[in-house]
Image 1: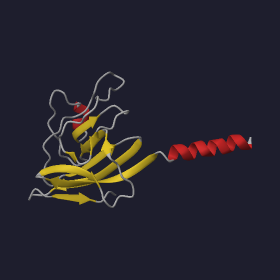
Image 2: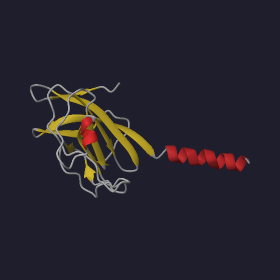
Image 3: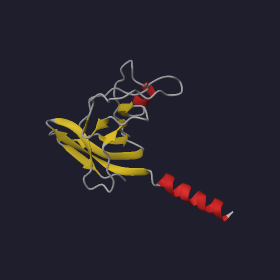
Image 4: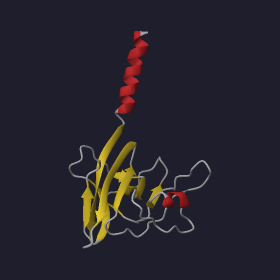
Length: 155
Protein backbone atom coordinates (compact mmCIF):
# COMPACT_ATOMS: atom_id res chain seq x y z
CA UNK A 1 0.00 0.00 0.00
CA UNK A 2 2.81 2.43 0.90
CA UNK A 3 4.52 1.72 -2.43
CA UNK A 4 1.30 2.50 -4.30
CA UNK A 5 0.95 5.85 -2.48
CA UNK A 6 4.60 6.71 -3.13
CA UNK A 7 4.22 5.87 -6.84
CA UNK A 8 1.09 8.03 -7.05
CA UNK A 9 2.91 10.99 -5.49
CA UNK A 10 5.90 10.61 -7.82
CA UNK A 11 3.59 10.35 -10.86
CA UNK A 12 1.64 13.45 -9.82
CA UNK A 13 4.81 15.46 -9.28
CA UNK A 14 6.27 14.41 -12.61
CA UNK A 15 3.11 15.41 -14.49
CA UNK A 16 2.91 18.75 -12.68
CA UNK A 17 6.55 19.46 -13.47
CA UNK A 18 5.93 19.31 -17.22
CA UNK A 19 3.63 22.32 -17.47
CA UNK A 20 4.80 25.90 -17.36
CA UNK A 21 3.32 29.37 -17.74
CA UNK A 22 5.01 32.42 -19.23
CA UNK A 23 4.00 36.05 -19.66
CA UNK A 24 3.66 37.53 -23.13
CA UNK A 25 4.09 41.19 -24.09
CA UNK A 26 3.21 42.99 -27.30
CA UNK A 27 5.99 45.01 -28.96
CA UNK A 28 6.56 46.84 -32.21
CA UNK A 29 9.37 45.34 -34.34
CA UNK A 30 10.22 47.16 -37.57
CA UNK A 31 6.79 48.80 -37.54
CA UNK A 32 4.92 45.51 -37.03
CA UNK A 33 3.04 44.22 -33.99
CA UNK A 34 4.79 41.21 -32.49
CA UNK A 35 4.56 39.10 -29.34
CA UNK A 36 7.51 38.00 -27.23
CA UNK A 37 8.03 36.27 -23.92
CA UNK A 38 8.19 38.97 -21.25
CA UNK A 39 11.86 39.25 -20.21
CA UNK A 40 10.60 39.48 -16.59
CA UNK A 41 8.63 36.24 -16.85
CA UNK A 42 9.70 33.46 -14.48
CA UNK A 43 9.37 30.90 -17.28
CA UNK A 44 10.36 31.08 -20.91
CA UNK A 45 9.40 29.55 -24.22
CA UNK A 46 11.10 29.16 -27.58
CA UNK A 47 8.12 28.64 -29.87
CA UNK A 48 4.34 28.44 -30.14
CA UNK A 49 1.86 26.07 -31.74
CA UNK A 50 -1.29 28.14 -31.17
CA UNK A 51 -2.23 31.79 -30.77
CA UNK A 52 -5.54 33.39 -29.83
CA UNK A 53 -6.07 37.17 -29.91
CA UNK A 54 -9.50 38.27 -28.70
CA UNK A 55 -11.33 40.96 -26.79
CA UNK A 56 -13.96 40.89 -24.07
CA UNK A 57 -15.08 44.37 -25.07
CA UNK A 58 -17.97 45.09 -27.45
CA UNK A 59 -15.71 45.47 -30.51
CA UNK A 60 -16.21 42.69 -33.06
CA UNK A 61 -14.46 41.80 -36.30
CA UNK A 62 -16.19 40.97 -39.56
CA UNK A 63 -15.80 37.27 -40.38
CA UNK A 64 -14.61 35.98 -43.74
CA UNK A 65 -16.05 32.72 -45.15
CA UNK A 66 -13.24 30.54 -43.74
CA UNK A 67 -13.62 31.92 -40.19
CA UNK A 68 -15.34 30.15 -37.33
CA UNK A 69 -18.25 32.60 -37.05
CA UNK A 70 -18.91 31.74 -33.39
CA UNK A 71 -15.32 32.57 -32.41
CA UNK A 72 -15.64 35.95 -34.19
CA UNK A 73 -19.00 36.59 -32.47
CA UNK A 74 -17.26 35.89 -29.15
CA UNK A 75 -14.54 38.48 -29.81
CA UNK A 76 -11.78 36.61 -31.68
CA UNK A 77 -9.60 38.74 -33.98
CA UNK A 78 -7.05 35.98 -34.73
CA UNK A 79 -7.32 32.33 -33.70
CA UNK A 80 -4.96 29.69 -35.02
CA UNK A 81 -4.00 26.24 -33.73
CA UNK A 82 -1.50 23.78 -35.17
CA UNK A 83 -1.01 20.10 -34.40
CA UNK A 84 -0.06 19.46 -30.80
CA UNK A 85 3.02 17.45 -31.75
CA UNK A 86 4.69 20.42 -33.45
CA UNK A 87 6.17 23.70 -32.24
CA UNK A 88 7.52 25.37 -35.38
CA UNK A 89 6.89 29.07 -34.75
CA UNK A 90 9.72 30.81 -32.88
CA UNK A 91 9.49 34.13 -31.07
CA UNK A 92 8.90 36.90 -31.95
CA UNK A 93 5.49 35.97 -33.33
CA UNK A 94 4.19 38.66 -35.68
CA UNK A 95 0.49 39.47 -35.63
CA UNK A 96 -1.20 37.89 -38.62
CA UNK A 97 1.81 35.92 -39.86
CA UNK A 98 0.85 32.41 -41.03
CA UNK A 99 1.71 29.72 -38.49
CA UNK A 100 3.94 26.91 -39.70
CA UNK A 101 2.75 23.38 -39.12
CA UNK A 102 -0.26 21.20 -39.80
CA UNK A 103 -3.56 22.81 -38.75
CA UNK A 104 -5.16 21.25 -35.69
CA UNK A 105 -8.18 19.17 -36.74
CA UNK A 106 -11.16 19.21 -34.39
CA UNK A 107 -13.49 16.25 -33.74
CA UNK A 108 -15.91 17.43 -36.42
CA UNK A 109 -13.09 17.32 -38.97
CA UNK A 110 -12.89 21.09 -39.28
CA UNK A 111 -9.83 23.24 -38.76
CA UNK A 112 -11.73 26.10 -37.11
CA UNK A 113 -9.90 29.31 -36.49
CA UNK A 114 -10.10 32.96 -37.44
CA UNK A 115 -7.94 34.72 -40.00
CA UNK A 116 -6.23 37.84 -38.60
CA UNK A 117 -8.40 40.96 -38.53
CA UNK A 118 -7.37 44.62 -38.28
CA UNK A 119 -6.98 45.58 -34.62
CA UNK A 120 -8.82 48.63 -33.35
CA UNK A 121 -7.22 51.53 -31.50
CA UNK A 122 -8.00 51.67 -27.77
CA UNK A 123 -9.51 48.18 -27.51
CA UNK A 124 -7.98 45.87 -24.89
CA UNK A 125 -7.00 42.51 -26.38
CA UNK A 126 -5.99 39.26 -24.70
CA UNK A 127 -3.30 37.16 -26.34
CA UNK A 128 -2.98 33.52 -25.33
CA UNK A 129 -0.51 30.98 -26.68
CA UNK A 130 0.50 27.40 -26.21
CA UNK A 131 3.94 26.05 -26.89
CA UNK A 132 5.91 22.86 -26.69
CA UNK A 133 4.85 20.36 -24.07
CA UNK A 134 2.23 21.94 -21.87
CA UNK A 135 3.52 25.51 -21.86
CA UNK A 136 1.04 28.36 -21.90
CA UNK A 137 1.57 32.10 -22.26
CA UNK A 138 -0.64 35.12 -22.14
CA UNK A 139 -0.86 38.86 -21.90
CA UNK A 140 -3.08 41.90 -22.49
CA UNK A 141 -2.44 44.91 -24.68
CA UNK A 142 -4.00 47.75 -26.62
CA UNK A 143 -3.00 49.82 -29.63
CA UNK A 144 -2.68 53.52 -28.80
CA UNK A 145 -3.69 56.36 -31.17
CA UNK A 146 0.00 57.03 -31.97
CA UNK A 147 0.35 53.37 -33.12
CA UNK A 148 2.36 52.45 -30.05
CA UNK A 149 1.46 49.48 -27.91
CA UNK A 150 0.55 49.47 -24.22
CA UNK A 151 0.82 46.22 -22.26
CA UNK A 152 -1.77 45.90 -19.52
CA UNK A 153 -1.29 43.74 -16.41
CA UNK A 154 -3.61 40.72 -16.28
CA UNK A 155 -6.10 40.77 -13.43
